[in-house]
Length: 118
Image (cartoon, rainbow, N blue to C red):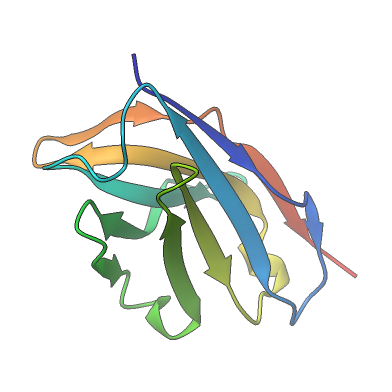
């Protein structure tokens, strides 16, 4: 059973960089054919896909967030990390990490609330 757990600060100031880590257990992030994604849900809105890191290490980001997004990984810890720079209050959301394949997202973390406020 694959499990994902998000961790990181719950409060970030505007203009700073949001950094979250997803720790994966029950499966390796280097296993073909999976993608390891970050997704967020602002209050009262739908899910927004942020980007992923492929099992090979390649990355792909949402065009609307690409200039401010970086996803990296630590294979020794089986973790992957999201960094979103220059955050604004519109970045307030529940952030999820998830495993993705060609059929969609099959395993999700429980989500972590991040508030962007001074």
